[in-house]
Image 1 (tube, rainbow, N blue to C red):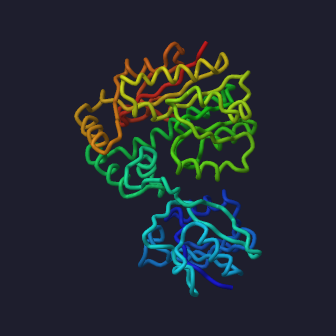
Image 2: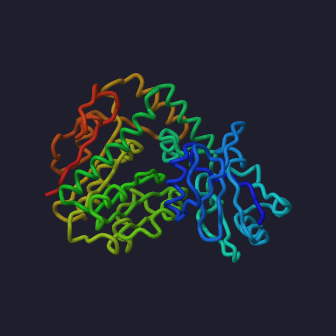
Image 3: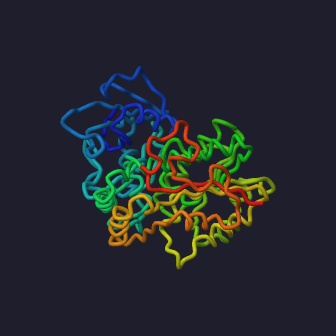
Length: 381
């Protein structure tokens, strides 16, 4: 059996790595050790053998994991299929090309019959990693690996203005989780998640379906990296679909057959617009897109929104916004009144438009203004 080194560890944390591969259908073959030494997981005829080398970072080198396959020629063909130059697809060890950046889940494997297991896909030819993208900057703040130097550079520049930005990103994820649980427990079990971003566990559908296995979710995003990864994660999940679309073209989202094919549009739907409207200045009137989507949903549907504000620290937020705008990403903050206006005619549910840490927390925050965001959930008549 041949062994080939490839960079496919999604995390430095063993439990996170095991959870990631479990979602892709891999099973443990042996008890996990304290480190990666001797840990083997498998899927069909493919085995991933992890080991720990304290001299290297497993996320940035190919020394973190071996893929053991029976058919070396098939593996060569698989790598060639995703763009590995032929002069690198020979020899006893197959290394990925040094001039290519791989993100999480961007790899291909073959089984013992030579069948390609498309667990991931290559970066699309039109995918420009030299320009920062909001979803990848957000992923960087959350500690993810689906980001590139331009994303990290902008993320760091904004952190210099607001050192707690990663904590604020986590606060947004926490709001999404709390809002999802609250809505499902209130009887709203269908979700339309706009600008869903790079998949981060627990995903919305995982939270909803833990409470009600019949819950249904449609994710919408316009980022090609999100497209590939989201479809991989939800491929075998009942009641969940991914729609490639854009908030600015709400009518196209509503006309997509995947929407009506996944959600029962005779029953209430929760529209989720978390940490998204900040990319649209007032002159673009983002509230009209929210209204278009919400008005098309049945009576009793809800909308959840979170949005940054300068109300709590104007100077720091202005510096962070300036860094984003300099990188070509328009970023705006809004006052509480401006945030409330985004809900249109929908009626805000208790506790209203509040600092994000104060929206139905499990325990009251010591400082509700520690995250510079407002959050709220409203219901249409």
